[in-house]
Amino acid sequence: MTTRFEPARPRPAAAVLAAAAAAVAAALLLAPAAAGAQIVEARRGMVSAQEPHAARAGLEVLEAGGSAVDAAVATAFALAVTHPQAGNIGGGGFLIVRPPAGPPAAYDFREAAPAAASAEMFLVDGEYDAARHHDSHVAVGVPGTVAGLHLAWSEQGRLPWRRLLEPAIALARDGFAVPAHLARSLAGVLPAMRRYPASLAQFSRDGAPYAAGETLRQPDLARTLERIAATGPDGFYRGPTAELIAREMQANGGLITTADLAAYRAVRREPVRGAYRGHEIISMPPPSSGGTVLIEMLNVLEGFDLAAGGHGTARTVHLMAETMRRAYADRALHLGDPDFNPALPLPRLLSKAYAARLRQSIDPERASRSSPASFAWPPAGEETTHLSVVDAERLAVALTYTLEQRYGSKIVVPGAGFLLNNEMGDFNPAPGLTTAAGLIGTPPNLAAPGKRMLSSMTPTIVARDGRLRLLTGSPGGRTIINTVLHTIVNVVDFGMDADAAVNAPRFHHQWLPDRLVHERGGLEAATRARLAAQGHALAERERQGVVQAIVYDAEADRLAGAPDRRAPGSTVLGY
Ligand code: DON
View 1 (cartoon, rainbow, N blue to C red):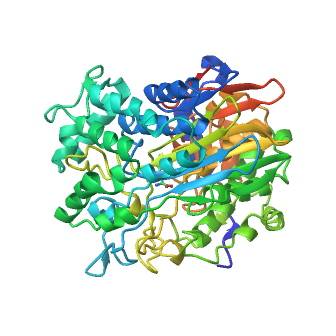
View 2: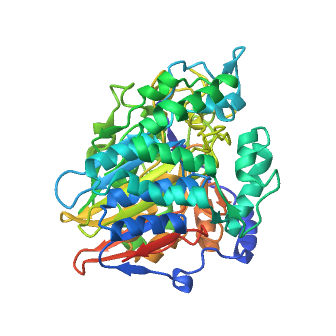
């Protein structure tokens, strides 16, 4: 790949200006941070999660003397009950833990391809079949969440395992009142669940959507959680739960067998580390692209004085977007499961020298153009969830996990009561299948037995002078890495407090398609006009990500968090 970036022609400002009027008129979710600021401060511990019952479960574990890992495990199991869009036991994810002393660790519990997987598995009669790739029993990867939570707990937990599942079991067994936003979300997904009777039974009242305030009980899920509480991962990967999964697969052309489930292992890895303006960045290595791309971007941005340019100005947005463009190109070209790609060029991508070369390729006045024009991305889901926890000893945990798309495959395992992921969709579709329609067939991320699909999830912890400074992470598919970048730059370069850092408007560039996508109302009209004149193709979206961040002031020994107002359930609790 020689010409990844070419100078772009300026784009007509008129169209952008026309869109501006509508944007100004739009209701601003992104009102100035001060308008609805809800900073939560605490001395001892804090939990930030996307749903209140789950955050409460984590806080109670902290209050009972549990570690941040214990609390993260309890919160994650509770989210599997109360936030079924993304909270899960049938999916996978990543957890970063930073102890107050000693090395940090990364836990990889990404889903794995079953033994019967192959690079051509999404082809039917030689033709790529998108439904098979994203929306079928074949799209389900071997789940990792239960193994990953258990591994992190076995190494860094304090309370008994069973205690951590109790809140989730009670929420599943006794039910909880469906909040209005979940009622809307469930009503939206029911049509897609009608194919799967167990899904319909679990998430509707005899086919009718739940109304806000009604009680959602999930007795099969409660029993599955009981098995996991009693026997640990064996309660999921062996015995009745594994048999129920395998039976559902076998009956519907899926690939996962009881042997695949028994063979699944979570892995502890070395986090990727970076340095940014005197801060230490600790984040997720491959099979996530997140930490690598994040550090590559921070290395490039370190050479620009962003604070002098100002937050949200055309200059800052341009420099950040050009940086994003370059790092996302590297993501597409180089990254995949490290166990299957022994030559991943991580040292180069993470080096300051490489960043300096990328920086020199950025024209401060003109947008580059991404090429080749035919190279775009496979679709990625927009639903995942992140949680951040700090305990009284300042052990810090950042955890992001997912079912891939909202409610994953939409398939509830009959008799077991939980949703399966459709994470196989994160593999590239087929060897060499790089098309004008936007598919990408580069080798590092093709499916193979036991391989983990490339992810963008970016749970990240920032330290300064050896002390904790910030935890952050977000859902949002490929936008995740840029959302995390925004949070870090907001705190480090712009000195924002927790509320502003989380709620300031965000934008995203991912190399291809060549678009600078900003939140509606997030850039001023004059800024948009200037960016368009520089050659950026602007587009809008309603929201980007849902950040769960905790900011630590080491001098004052104080934790601060703020709910992300983009998502109604976002909750920060401290004590
Ligand atoms: O692992 C990934 O990068 C995607 N499967 C995550 C999907 C996602 O973030 C959806 N989020 N909102």
